[in-house]
Length: 475
Image 1 (cartoon, rainbow, N blue to C red):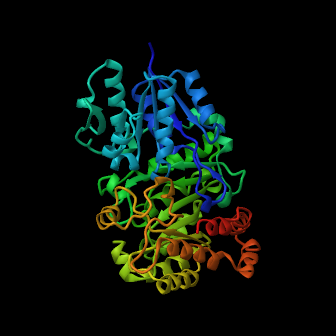
Image 2 (image 1 turned 45 degrees about the vertical axis):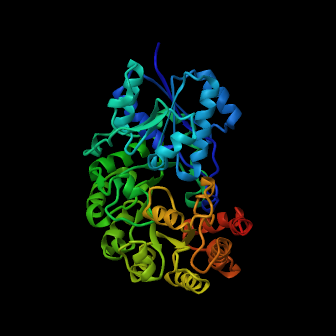
C-alpha cells in the first residue's frame, strides 16, 4: 500500500491589521518540496483551506476522500488550536491516520501540547525537512521512532523528546518550494493592501534565523541563535524562477533580517542584469541600524525591484529598547525612515506598546515619535509573551500573563498589564495609537492622493477594511 501524505493549511482567521490578503502556505510548500525530492514514491497533496474555501466540515470530507496515511499541519501560536482541530478531524476520519504538527509554537510547547491534545501523534521540533523525512521512513517501515532526532511523541503514556537535530548547513541544497502542488490556486494568492488585488503574491526564504536576541522574538531561539543564508545567486535564481515560471510579482522575503551589510551589494549585482528585475516588487524586513548605515545599498536594491522594507522600530525609549535587547537606538529609526523615503521605498515601521514600565505618558510619547519619524505605514502591536521567548519565561514566572487563550496571541489583543496600566488600558492605548496615526481626515486624504502608488493602495484599503473600528471593538 502506497503512502499518502496530506499537508493541510487549516481554516483560520487572518490578521485584520494587514487588511485583506491570502498568503500561500509557504512553510508547507518548503516541507513538501523536500519530502517529494527525498521520498519520490510517497504521494503528496497540499490542502489549502483558505484558497479552496473549505470550512471544517469540508476539510473532513476532503481528508476522507483522500484517504491519507499521514496528515501534517503547522501554524503560529495564534493558529495553534486550528492545527489541533485539523488533527482531531483526521482522527475522526480514521484513527489509523498518523497526525504530525510542526512549527515554532509546537516546538516550544511540545510537552504541554502532547499532554493536552491526544489527537497529535508527533511533533516535529525545530528545522523540519530532514526530521520529517526520517520520521516518515520510520512510520512506513514500522520502526520505533526513538531513533529519529528532533521529534516529540507519547510512549506508554509518557511524553518522549528525542535529541535535537543539527541544523542544515547548506541552505542552497534545499529545493525550491513546491508551488507546483498549489498551482491551481496561484491566482487566488494576493496581498491587496500591499500590492493590489490582482498582483501575483508569493513568499520565498533567503535565510533562516537571526544573530540578535530580542526578548520578545521566537525566531532566533527556534533557529538556534544563528543566521544562515542561501547564496545570493541561489536567492536571485529563486526570484527569477518564481517570476518566470509562475508569474510571481510581489515577492515577500520570509527572512527576519535581510542583512543589507552582507547581502545587499551581492544581491544587487545578481539581479541587475536579469529580466525579472523590472517585473518584481520585493518586500524585505530589516533592522533600523542596518538601513541607517547603508543608504547606498538601499538605493541599489530599489533599482532591482525592492519596493517595501519593514523595520522593527519597536519603541522610542532607549530604556525599553535595551529591555527588548534590540541593540538599536531611536536615532536609527529617524535615519532609516528618511533613507527609505528618499529612495522611493515604502517605509513600514513596527512599534510595540505594553512594556512593564509603560504608562499613558510613555505611550503618548511613542505616538508622537511614530509621527515624527514619518513612515508611510505604521503598525502598532501589544507586547505578547509568545512561548519560546525570553519574555514568556519572565512573564510566566512573575504572573503577568492574564490571557492564556492562544487565539488572542495575534499582537492585536493585549495579553498583559504593565506596572501601572491594566490589560484593558493597554488595549485602549493600542486603539489610540491607530486612531492617532490613521484617524486624521487630512492625513487620510493625503494618503489616498499620494504620488506613491503603494501608499494610495494602502490608505484606501485601510479605510475599506475599517481597521480602526475593529481595534475599538477589542476594548
